Length: 480
Image (tube, helix red, strand yellow):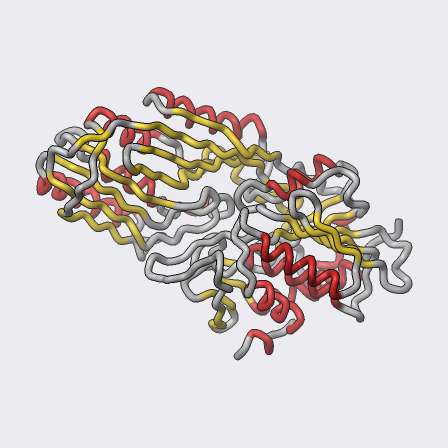
């Protein structure tokens, strides 16, 4: 079956058009032009602000002029992850999609349903002629995935809507009313290099699930950086390890799936034997949640220089000590992660070390508590630490009019109660709300699995459910 034949056809048509346009975070020029042209072709008032957000305005349909005005909001960029054996250029190629039963997925890459399905849904509302709705402002933000600079750059006064519907949630039975804030923690250092003195060993971790570093952080998935750190650490007691290179993990908002390290040791066979023993333990630990995990430890060769034994020990010990995963569960909201950290990327090349982290929390003070713990560990090892890209969380308002309306409509339509929740992902609502404090906000969307990984897939029946629910919401928005 072709995507164009799936219901609702209008959404999958627009999603296919969108996914033909390359849209990596921070490289959104093509998709900005695409959305701007889309609005202009419809004859709608279309503007691009100074940071690249696109705003398209559509008047209310007949009889809906006295209803509260709505902002429909999604982000244009997507997480770009692929399997190592896939040859794909996210900057020049469109996503290659396929249907697998009730799911739409990509061929070896992220699908871009996060947040492309939200974008396609808003496009579908904008071009519709038979869907009742109040006055609309469609807000397409940029760079949500790697800094939220679009939302941060949105100025007061650009929007007049009274209710914001963010379409960036990944469970169709959830109504999100709060989210975590975040801060990037970057650890760096430069070390002198010299010719290695020992035998070369290569360590590789692959086959992990990966996933969203907020929404999936509590699921116990393996982190390639942490597993590599454990394997390296096991040799410190009996070996003189010199690190040559590490290339592990990727984006801050994705749990690392793959990584490799090249080291020099005095006795390669002894190191391989000890690391292989630990490998067996790790595979047993993760057998249930990571059945695809593979760990390779083998003799290798390298002409590259290494950092000293002393500096190598500092790097390895830091990797072993950095907190990864859940830091604290919320005492106020059941089953909600309050604070966490994702050790996202470790790179050592030519003596240049960089470790990227994304620390999240729904409470600002605990966000910085985690970040300061990472800083303390790294500074004890003589490394440099920088905090950047901090953004606020979104405080829940469960009694707001739009939340109560959506709960009521959901129960009437689907004969069950929705889950009204806060999430551990970083949504743009908190940032937008800082400049628009009177605006009521809700986030919801169709079911998506494996976001931020090449296993990402979007559920077809759920998209139909979401589309029907959204149309009912728009038709029942209260009067001003």
